[in-house]
Length: 168
Image 1 (cartoon, rainbow, N blue to C red):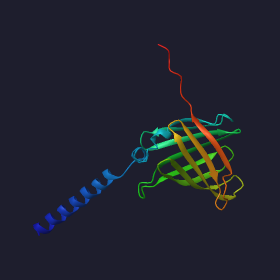
Image 2: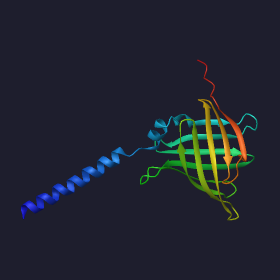
Image 3: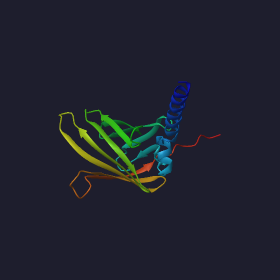
Image 4: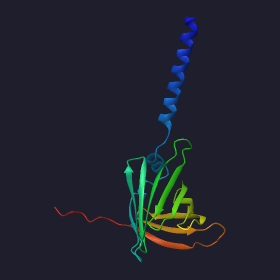
């Protein structure tokens, strides 16, 4: 009987250690972005023509990025994080007019793509993708696509806003 109890405790301890090892191996958002070389997305990006701005900032370091943007009087906010079960990078957000979005990010060498479903304030549903193409560390081109439409419906150049250094 003691051997059965000992074996059971060894088995339970093994399962706990295995689970802890798997949890430790799970990637967080910071690791995913660094591996994809997209950790440089954090910052404020401005369209020089329209002065529309998008800001990516850590809400919880290496776990959640908050995305805020202003465009033509409309404001939007989103959160980017990692689904602990699937390991995929999710996005959820809403805007000041009542549209909500839910989607996933994919990262490649020079492209970050957000594919999402949305529901607008009237209850109309749809799908879109937003592609960020990095041309260098301080410049990106963003394009918005609807499924089945060959050309982007929106295109803009984004430039990283650099803060002025404080004089000594």
